[in-house]
Image 1 (cartoon, rainbow, N blue to C red):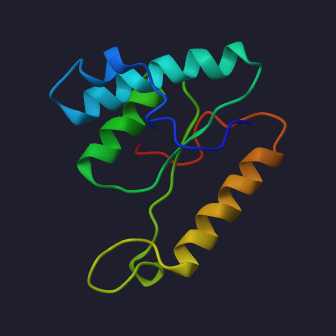
Image 2: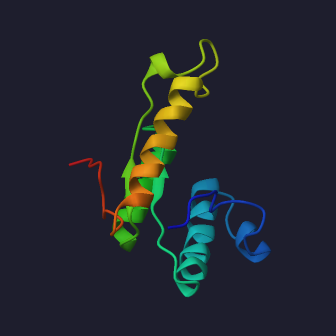
Length: 115
């Protein structure tokens, strides 16, 4: 299973300039990375770590494309006060989730749902 940032600088530059909408640009980079990861024989699961509108769009996109995705919103008490980034407990929760997913024989189609 691939665990890492699929939206990083290693993505094809053409896809980084495709759209002015950052969510659409991320979706295009995700399409490229899904193919690259599969070609290398790895599994991919996307962890969507927020329920903000942009994150929910990415989660829905993954579901529509058949890309395994898990919606996991880190609760406020696991975030740093006054800024919103994950604190130690939030980072530990995400790491534990990634570890559980990596240990599973099949990546779930969706562990979280919006329905």
